[in-house]
Image 1 (cartoon, rainbow, N blue to C red):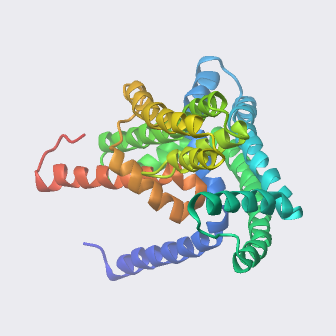
Image 2: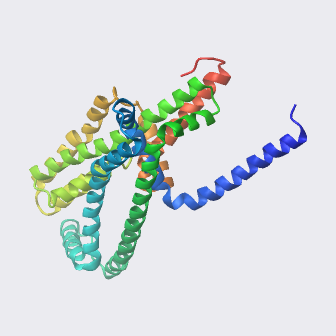
Image 3: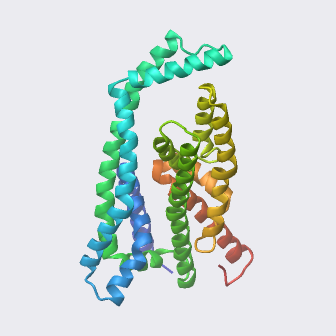
Length: 340
Protein backbone atom coordinates (compact mmCIF):
# COMPACT_ATOMS: atom_id res chain seq x y z
CA UNK A 1 0.00 0.00 0.00
CA UNK A 2 1.50 3.38 -0.97
CA UNK A 3 2.61 5.65 1.85
CA UNK A 4 1.31 9.18 2.42
CA UNK A 5 4.50 10.60 0.93
CA UNK A 6 4.08 8.49 -2.23
CA UNK A 7 0.45 9.61 -2.58
CA UNK A 8 1.49 13.23 -2.05
CA UNK A 9 4.16 12.96 -4.73
CA UNK A 10 1.80 11.22 -7.19
CA UNK A 11 -1.06 13.68 -6.81
CA UNK A 12 1.23 16.73 -6.72
CA UNK A 13 2.85 15.59 -9.96
CA UNK A 14 -0.59 15.06 -11.51
CA UNK A 15 -1.70 18.58 -10.49
CA UNK A 16 1.50 20.11 -11.90
CA UNK A 17 1.08 18.24 -15.18
CA UNK A 18 -2.59 19.34 -15.42
CA UNK A 19 -1.83 23.00 -14.67
CA UNK A 20 1.11 23.17 -17.07
CA UNK A 21 -0.88 21.31 -19.73
CA UNK A 22 -3.84 23.70 -19.50
CA UNK A 23 -1.52 26.75 -19.61
CA UNK A 24 0.37 25.44 -22.63
CA UNK A 25 -2.87 24.52 -24.43
CA UNK A 26 -4.33 28.02 -23.90
CA UNK A 27 -1.21 29.66 -25.31
CA UNK A 28 -0.91 27.27 -28.22
CA UNK A 29 -4.53 27.62 -29.42
CA UNK A 30 -3.61 30.20 -32.16
CA UNK A 31 -1.28 27.58 -33.67
CA UNK A 32 -3.69 24.67 -33.33
CA UNK A 33 -4.47 24.61 -37.04
CA UNK A 34 -0.79 24.14 -37.92
CA UNK A 35 -0.34 21.41 -35.29
CA UNK A 36 -3.42 19.49 -36.41
CA UNK A 37 -2.40 19.89 -40.04
CA UNK A 38 1.05 18.47 -39.23
CA UNK A 39 -0.55 15.45 -37.51
CA UNK A 40 -2.85 14.90 -40.50
CA UNK A 41 -0.08 15.03 -43.12
CA UNK A 42 2.19 12.88 -40.92
CA UNK A 43 -0.43 10.14 -40.82
CA UNK A 44 -0.69 10.30 -44.61
CA UNK A 45 3.10 10.13 -45.08
CA UNK A 46 4.14 7.71 -42.31
CA UNK A 47 4.08 4.65 -44.58
CA UNK A 48 6.29 6.37 -47.14
CA UNK A 49 8.67 7.35 -44.33
CA UNK A 50 8.91 3.73 -43.22
CA UNK A 51 9.50 2.57 -46.81
CA UNK A 52 12.34 5.04 -47.37
CA UNK A 53 14.10 4.53 -44.03
CA UNK A 54 13.52 0.86 -43.23
CA UNK A 55 13.48 -0.78 -46.67
CA UNK A 56 15.73 1.52 -48.68
CA UNK A 57 18.02 2.58 -45.86
CA UNK A 58 17.73 6.35 -46.28
CA UNK A 59 18.83 8.63 -43.44
CA UNK A 60 15.79 9.89 -41.55
CA UNK A 61 16.72 13.54 -42.10
CA UNK A 62 16.98 13.03 -45.88
CA UNK A 63 13.71 11.08 -46.04
CA UNK A 64 11.96 13.71 -43.90
CA UNK A 65 13.21 16.50 -46.19
CA UNK A 66 12.00 14.69 -49.34
CA UNK A 67 8.58 14.00 -47.83
CA UNK A 68 8.35 17.59 -46.60
CA UNK A 69 8.93 18.77 -50.18
CA UNK A 70 6.24 16.30 -51.34
CA UNK A 71 3.79 17.72 -48.78
CA UNK A 72 4.50 21.26 -49.97
CA UNK A 73 4.06 20.37 -53.66
CA UNK A 74 1.05 18.04 -53.34
CA UNK A 75 -0.90 19.58 -50.44
CA UNK A 76 0.16 23.09 -49.50
CA UNK A 77 0.83 24.76 -52.86
CA UNK A 78 -2.57 23.77 -54.41
CA UNK A 79 -4.44 24.88 -51.27
CA UNK A 80 -2.48 28.14 -51.17
CA UNK A 81 -3.13 28.88 -54.86
CA UNK A 82 -6.85 28.26 -54.50
CA UNK A 83 -6.98 30.42 -51.38
CA UNK A 84 -4.96 33.14 -53.09
CA UNK A 85 -7.34 33.15 -56.05
CA UNK A 86 -10.27 33.88 -53.75
CA UNK A 87 -8.27 36.43 -51.71
CA UNK A 88 -7.29 38.36 -54.85
CA UNK A 89 -10.95 38.50 -55.85
CA UNK A 90 -11.95 39.81 -52.41
CA UNK A 91 -9.06 42.32 -52.28
CA UNK A 92 -10.09 43.67 -55.67
CA UNK A 93 -13.57 44.30 -54.26
CA UNK A 94 -12.13 46.02 -51.15
CA UNK A 95 -9.86 48.28 -53.23
CA UNK A 96 -12.59 49.09 -55.76
CA UNK A 97 -16.06 48.66 -54.16
CA UNK A 98 -17.69 49.69 -57.46
CA UNK A 99 -16.64 46.32 -58.92
CA UNK A 100 -19.14 44.77 -56.50
CA UNK A 101 -21.73 47.55 -56.32
CA UNK A 102 -22.31 47.63 -60.11
CA UNK A 103 -23.25 43.93 -60.49
CA UNK A 104 -25.21 44.00 -57.21
CA UNK A 105 -27.16 47.03 -58.45
CA UNK A 106 -27.78 45.22 -61.74
CA UNK A 107 -29.03 42.15 -59.86
CA UNK A 108 -31.27 44.30 -57.65
CA UNK A 109 -32.75 45.95 -60.73
CA UNK A 110 -33.43 42.56 -62.29
CA UNK A 111 -35.16 41.35 -59.12
CA UNK A 112 -37.25 44.54 -58.95
CA UNK A 113 -38.15 44.22 -62.63
CA UNK A 114 -39.24 40.58 -62.27
CA UNK A 115 -40.81 40.64 -58.78
CA UNK A 116 -41.49 44.29 -57.97
CA UNK A 117 -39.47 44.03 -54.73
CA UNK A 118 -36.99 46.90 -54.23
CA UNK A 119 -33.60 45.90 -52.81
CA UNK A 120 -31.47 48.84 -53.96
CA UNK A 121 -32.31 51.27 -51.16
CA UNK A 122 -29.99 53.87 -49.65
CA UNK A 123 -29.86 52.02 -46.33
CA UNK A 124 -28.83 48.76 -48.01
CA UNK A 125 -26.11 50.51 -50.03
CA UNK A 126 -24.68 52.17 -46.89
CA UNK A 127 -24.66 48.82 -45.09
CA UNK A 128 -22.89 47.11 -48.00
CA UNK A 129 -20.28 49.87 -48.35
CA UNK A 130 -19.60 49.79 -44.60
CA UNK A 131 -19.36 46.01 -44.55
CA UNK A 132 -16.76 45.67 -47.36
CA UNK A 133 -13.77 47.05 -45.32
CA UNK A 134 -14.55 44.61 -42.49
CA UNK A 135 -14.39 41.75 -44.99
CA UNK A 136 -11.00 43.05 -46.16
CA UNK A 137 -9.67 43.18 -42.59
CA UNK A 138 -10.92 39.65 -41.97
CA UNK A 139 -9.20 38.40 -45.14
CA UNK A 140 -5.87 40.05 -44.20
CA UNK A 141 -6.04 38.62 -40.69
CA UNK A 142 -6.93 35.20 -42.08
CA UNK A 143 -3.99 35.25 -44.50
CA UNK A 144 -1.56 36.24 -41.74
CA UNK A 145 -2.90 33.48 -39.51
CA UNK A 146 -2.66 30.97 -42.38
CA UNK A 147 0.97 31.94 -43.08
CA UNK A 148 1.98 31.55 -39.42
CA UNK A 149 0.23 28.19 -39.11
CA UNK A 150 1.84 27.06 -42.37
CA UNK A 151 5.31 27.69 -40.91
CA UNK A 152 4.30 25.85 -37.72
CA UNK A 153 2.95 22.94 -39.79
CA UNK A 154 6.18 22.51 -41.77
CA UNK A 155 8.39 22.84 -38.69
CA UNK A 156 6.39 20.34 -36.61
CA UNK A 157 5.90 17.93 -39.51
CA UNK A 158 9.65 17.67 -40.10
CA UNK A 159 10.37 16.64 -36.51
CA UNK A 160 7.37 14.31 -36.44
CA UNK A 161 8.77 12.51 -39.47
CA UNK A 162 12.20 12.31 -37.84
CA UNK A 163 10.94 10.79 -34.58
CA UNK A 164 7.66 9.29 -35.73
CA UNK A 165 8.12 5.71 -34.55
CA UNK A 166 9.29 6.70 -31.08
CA UNK A 167 6.39 9.15 -30.83
CA UNK A 168 3.86 6.48 -31.77
CA UNK A 169 5.32 3.99 -29.28
CA UNK A 170 5.23 6.64 -26.54
CA UNK A 171 1.58 7.51 -27.29
CA UNK A 172 0.65 3.82 -27.38
CA UNK A 173 2.33 3.25 -23.99
CA UNK A 174 0.47 6.20 -22.46
CA UNK A 175 -2.97 4.91 -23.49
CA UNK A 176 -5.09 3.36 -20.71
CA UNK A 177 -5.48 0.09 -22.61
CA UNK A 178 -3.54 -3.09 -23.14
CA UNK A 179 -1.11 -3.26 -26.07
CA UNK A 180 -3.59 -4.92 -28.47
CA UNK A 181 -6.38 -2.39 -27.84
CA UNK A 182 -3.86 0.48 -28.10
CA UNK A 183 -2.80 -0.79 -31.53
CA UNK A 184 -6.46 -0.98 -32.55
CA UNK A 185 -7.08 2.59 -31.37
CA UNK A 186 -4.10 3.93 -33.31
CA UNK A 187 -5.19 1.94 -36.37
CA UNK A 188 -8.72 3.37 -36.08
CA UNK A 189 -7.34 6.91 -35.81
CA UNK A 190 -5.18 6.24 -38.88
CA UNK A 191 -8.17 5.01 -40.91
CA UNK A 192 -10.44 7.87 -39.89
CA UNK A 193 -7.80 10.54 -40.57
CA UNK A 194 -7.05 9.03 -43.99
CA UNK A 195 -10.76 8.83 -44.75
CA UNK A 196 -11.31 12.50 -43.92
CA UNK A 197 -7.98 13.96 -45.06
CA UNK A 198 -8.14 12.23 -48.45
CA UNK A 199 -11.85 11.55 -48.90
CA UNK A 200 -13.23 15.04 -48.14
CA UNK A 201 -10.74 17.01 -50.34
CA UNK A 202 -11.00 14.42 -53.12
CA UNK A 203 -14.78 14.59 -53.04
CA UNK A 204 -14.63 18.40 -53.06
CA UNK A 205 -12.31 18.49 -56.08
CA UNK A 206 -14.41 15.97 -58.03
CA UNK A 207 -17.68 17.78 -57.30
CA UNK A 208 -16.10 21.14 -58.11
CA UNK A 209 -14.74 19.79 -61.41
CA UNK A 210 -18.11 18.26 -62.35
CA UNK A 211 -19.89 21.51 -61.42
CA UNK A 212 -17.33 23.50 -63.45
CA UNK A 213 -18.22 21.36 -66.47
CA UNK A 214 -21.90 22.19 -65.92
CA UNK A 215 -21.15 25.91 -65.64
CA UNK A 216 -19.31 25.75 -68.97
CA UNK A 217 -22.08 23.76 -70.68
CA UNK A 218 -24.89 26.10 -69.57
CA UNK A 219 -22.96 29.34 -70.01
CA UNK A 220 -22.68 30.48 -66.40
CA UNK A 221 -20.58 33.64 -65.83
CA UNK A 222 -17.02 33.17 -64.43
CA UNK A 223 -17.28 29.35 -64.43
CA UNK A 224 -13.80 28.73 -62.97
CA UNK A 225 -14.40 31.01 -60.00
CA UNK A 226 -17.76 29.42 -59.21
CA UNK A 227 -16.25 25.96 -59.70
CA UNK A 228 -13.63 26.71 -57.05
CA UNK A 229 -16.30 28.02 -54.68
CA UNK A 230 -18.29 24.84 -55.31
CA UNK A 231 -15.27 22.85 -54.07
CA UNK A 232 -15.39 24.70 -50.77
CA UNK A 233 -19.18 24.48 -50.56
CA UNK A 234 -19.01 20.67 -50.44
CA UNK A 235 -17.82 20.87 -46.80
CA UNK A 236 -21.02 22.65 -45.72
CA UNK A 237 -23.37 20.00 -44.34
CA UNK A 238 -26.85 19.41 -45.82
CA UNK A 239 -26.91 22.27 -48.39
CA UNK A 240 -23.44 21.66 -49.86
CA UNK A 241 -22.92 22.53 -53.53
CA UNK A 242 -26.51 23.77 -53.93
CA UNK A 243 -25.37 26.89 -52.07
CA UNK A 244 -23.50 27.84 -55.27
CA UNK A 245 -25.25 26.43 -58.31
CA UNK A 246 -28.81 27.19 -57.15
CA UNK A 247 -28.34 30.99 -56.69
CA UNK A 248 -26.26 31.02 -59.88
CA UNK A 249 -29.13 29.41 -61.78
CA UNK A 250 -31.49 31.96 -60.19
CA UNK A 251 -29.29 34.81 -61.46
CA UNK A 252 -29.25 33.32 -64.95
CA UNK A 253 -33.05 33.06 -64.86
CA UNK A 254 -33.33 36.72 -63.86
CA UNK A 255 -31.19 37.71 -66.85
CA UNK A 256 -33.64 35.93 -69.13
CA UNK A 257 -31.62 32.76 -69.76
CA UNK A 258 -34.43 30.48 -68.58
CA UNK A 259 -33.45 27.37 -70.52
CA UNK A 260 -29.79 27.33 -69.32
CA UNK A 261 -30.97 28.11 -65.78
CA UNK A 262 -33.38 25.15 -65.74
CA UNK A 263 -30.67 22.97 -67.28
CA UNK A 264 -28.20 24.01 -64.58
CA UNK A 265 -30.72 23.21 -61.82
CA UNK A 266 -31.35 19.75 -63.31
CA UNK A 267 -27.62 19.18 -63.80
CA UNK A 268 -26.86 20.20 -60.22
CA UNK A 269 -29.67 18.06 -58.78
CA UNK A 270 -29.10 14.93 -60.87
CA UNK A 271 -25.34 15.00 -61.48
CA UNK A 272 -23.40 17.20 -59.05
CA UNK A 273 -25.33 16.12 -55.96
CA UNK A 274 -25.20 12.40 -56.77
CA UNK A 275 -21.46 12.45 -57.46
CA UNK A 276 -21.13 12.48 -53.66
CA UNK A 277 -22.81 9.07 -53.33
CA UNK A 278 -20.84 7.50 -56.20
CA UNK A 279 -17.43 8.67 -54.93
CA UNK A 280 -18.19 7.61 -51.35
CA UNK A 281 -19.24 4.16 -52.60
CA UNK A 282 -16.01 3.77 -54.58
CA UNK A 283 -13.82 4.91 -51.65
CA UNK A 284 -15.64 2.83 -49.05
CA UNK A 285 -13.50 -0.31 -49.53
CA UNK A 286 -10.17 1.52 -49.16
CA UNK A 287 -11.05 3.86 -46.30
CA UNK A 288 -12.93 3.85 -43.04
CA UNK A 289 -16.71 3.82 -43.41
CA UNK A 290 -17.89 6.87 -41.48
CA UNK A 291 -21.61 7.24 -40.88
CA UNK A 292 -23.03 10.31 -42.72
CA UNK A 293 -24.44 11.73 -39.46
CA UNK A 294 -20.97 11.62 -37.89
CA UNK A 295 -19.60 13.51 -40.89
CA UNK A 296 -22.38 16.12 -40.83
CA UNK A 297 -22.31 16.87 -37.09
CA UNK A 298 -18.52 16.44 -37.01
CA UNK A 299 -18.10 19.20 -39.59
CA UNK A 300 -20.29 21.54 -37.51
CA UNK A 301 -18.28 20.74 -34.37
CA UNK A 302 -14.93 21.00 -36.14
CA UNK A 303 -15.64 24.32 -37.83
CA UNK A 304 -16.65 25.92 -34.53
CA UNK A 305 -13.60 24.53 -32.69
CA UNK A 306 -10.74 24.62 -35.19
CA UNK A 307 -11.86 26.66 -38.18
CA UNK A 308 -11.30 25.28 -41.68
CA UNK A 309 -9.01 22.42 -40.54
CA UNK A 310 -11.95 21.27 -38.37
CA UNK A 311 -13.53 19.85 -41.53
CA UNK A 312 -11.09 16.94 -41.02
CA UNK A 313 -10.75 16.87 -37.25
CA UNK A 314 -14.39 17.43 -36.32
CA UNK A 315 -15.56 14.10 -37.80
CA UNK A 316 -12.40 12.50 -36.34
CA UNK A 317 -13.27 13.65 -32.81
CA UNK A 318 -16.88 12.53 -33.12
CA UNK A 319 -15.91 9.18 -34.68
CA UNK A 320 -13.34 8.55 -31.91
CA UNK A 321 -15.96 9.42 -29.28
CA UNK A 322 -18.33 6.82 -30.76
CA UNK A 323 -15.46 4.30 -30.98
CA UNK A 324 -14.49 4.81 -27.31
CA UNK A 325 -18.14 4.51 -26.20
CA UNK A 326 -18.43 1.22 -28.09
CA UNK A 327 -15.11 0.06 -26.59
CA UNK A 328 -16.30 0.91 -23.07
CA UNK A 329 -19.57 -0.96 -23.64
CA UNK A 330 -17.80 -4.01 -25.05
CA UNK A 331 -15.04 -4.21 -22.44
CA UNK A 332 -16.73 -3.14 -19.20
CA UNK A 333 -20.51 -3.46 -19.64
CA UNK A 334 -20.64 -6.61 -21.79
CA UNK A 335 -17.54 -8.08 -20.16
CA UNK A 336 -15.91 -9.17 -23.42
CA UNK A 337 -12.16 -9.61 -23.25
CA UNK A 338 -11.74 -9.39 -27.01
CA UNK A 339 -13.05 -6.09 -28.34
CA UNK A 340 -12.53 -4.43 -31.70
